[in-house]
Image (cartoon, rainbow, N blue to C red; front, side, top):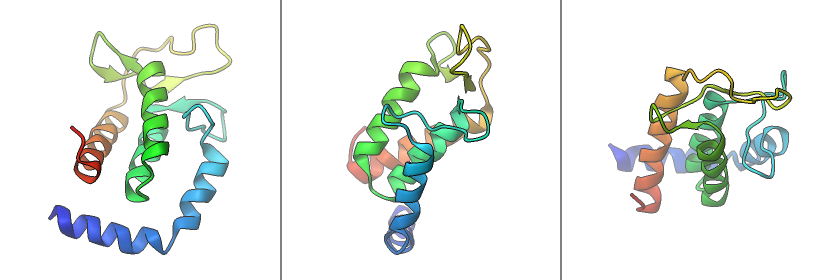
Length: 121
């Protein structure tokens, strides 16, 4: 199953590499934050999209940058999950320590797929 997934991903995404480039120019900051254009904030769900797209486009450099930012700014050591929102203009950007299940699930999926693609546990 993984081989099929990898093959289909490679076929589709290699033909659409400009989509990834466009996504990065619109939403990805140099530090690895994926920005919600409507609020200027970052969310675990948006970070997970960046991670998944990085895997699909075989862009380990972007993956590492996004993961580093996500771990540094959203990871909650007490729960082992990711806080759902990072609000840049707030005194405490992660005042709400709740997680979002979809963001956590997609981050886990991205980590699994990245481990398979780059042979890195």
